[in-house]
Length: 522
Image (cartoon, rainbow, N blue to C red; front, top):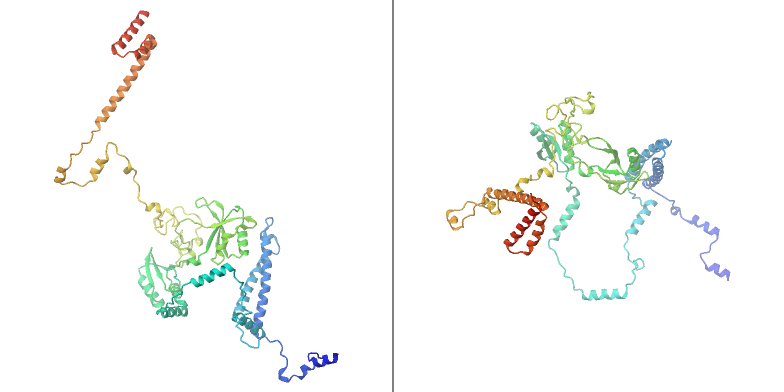
């Protein structure tokens, strides 16, 4: 039985027969080795290098973070701190080069390439539509009540009316034109501010001939040049720089740095340590400075951080710990003031965006103030903006220094005397002053107006009342003296309550006086 099974089973082969199969193949059908094109090999090598660089970067970041966050020893005390910083910077440059090499490698189109074929097969499999029932996603059967409600809703649902728009072709044409020309919608660029002088027509004509038509407006001694797109903006800027014209730029809002204030740190905390900690956290830090009071220059326990406007820059407000300390980070709310350039000492721009000739604040020379040979303080300086002596161009009381209109200055002044109540003047009299003059017929029909009461009458009444009250008090004082000398008068006054006639009351009073005179003869 075993021999029959061996003969009938074609799958069972001995070792010699299996080894001889490869020898029986023709010359053109030899087994092929693994093949990969040059581009795929470069991509594979670059990907491997990038993986190793990421691991090295993670190691350096953790090492630098541990060294810089040590509260008992400065980071410079570690012997490897400086070398790690250099290695970290070098590694960042190498990673940029590796990323550029990966992006520059072309796509593989070799059909025999194993790496490219595997990649294309995976993409084709992912994009292949689901046709068979076995590959379809499994959907569980709904509950009975829910299924019944859905069936009932489908029966009661009214058929929808199909609508057709004969002008839909126009919308499709507009969409295709917008997709074909994506560069037509350009963002608005900030204006270029050209210094105004008497030869402004020649300057604008040269700009128009070189760079095309622009929109120009005069404002605060400068001509604002508005361009249509970024290419024209760069052409105008380079042309003005070649001609040597005085102008300054305005940084676009999306390119301006983000400023944040760090609170709950001590005055002795080093800003460089904060900068290193934020840099290791992934933020692009420009600088970290300590805030101070405006007049006294006294340092404050607040740090100002300037960040480049990167996609993760606004995440700094979510940071709660820096160098193992709890912090609070808020948006910077600066003083409302007009900026002054340190280079030309003009207003409404900064030295970073200034392309005008420098002017010294002390001697009015063609150099910046920090490069002036005069290092001491001038007793009686001359302002280079207004020409007056006694102050410099940075003095806020200068007549050429722009003033900010506050909301309180725009409000109408309040006169307190207008709301006072006028004595001895009635409401009717005030209305009578504001009424227009009447005709003769209207005056005949109306009743005569009441004459105002003179001010002397109430004054006399008040004086009489004051004199009566003073006389009454004097009479009471004399009566008090008399009653202390004649105690019989008190009993007589009590008995007067029971008498109704005036004669009876007077007789009681006379009787008490007579009895007092008899008891105390003079």
